[in-house]
Length: 268
Image (cartoon, rainbow, N blue to C red; front, side, top):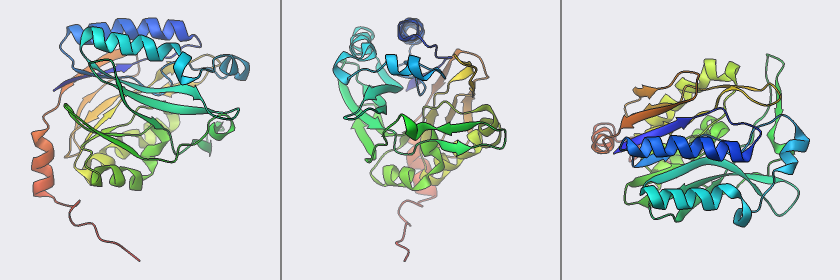
């Protein structure tokens, strides 16, 4: 299965981000990709709280939803929207990922569970929970093109989530992200490879890159990792389309050779 990752620098402009992704998704589809993944915060990125609050949508009126459902149906491709912001039932938002089929149907969505509240040695402080409401449900979905486990960014540091998804049958783990540069340089690749190896699964990690409105910098380096933990495709730190063919027979080969999922034991 040929997949594509759209690595981007999201702007503080929903329409501009739609236009950019539409162009790139059309390009990826014309090159034979049947599954296309975008990063976390595909719809909007800014450090300005006023700007962020001005771009709050319910699911039924978010411009990304109808547009990319129609595009998926038109191009006959699966689109994974890494995450967009959706109003919750209070003043906060969900950081929500969507999987859209080649018929233009939403087959699954996932609300990011683990929120990025950190104080980094570089002096950078993040409090995602100040504006985002945490999800509480792991989401896996069996489709005609594979069994997907849906996660977002900081989730990658919580291996039990990925084990839950793998034990439910997921063999393609989705990790859209907007990693900081310091943590990306130190941890991004090793975390992704660890989750692939532990679970005998492909990892598809679409990343934000570059400098965003307000000066925030993201790491880039979107990756595809096979079940053996090998990085089989990697982008740099500029916007691009990353392509890879994934062979799902590799999943069965790995899980037969190293059947750790079957060897799980309850520990008290």
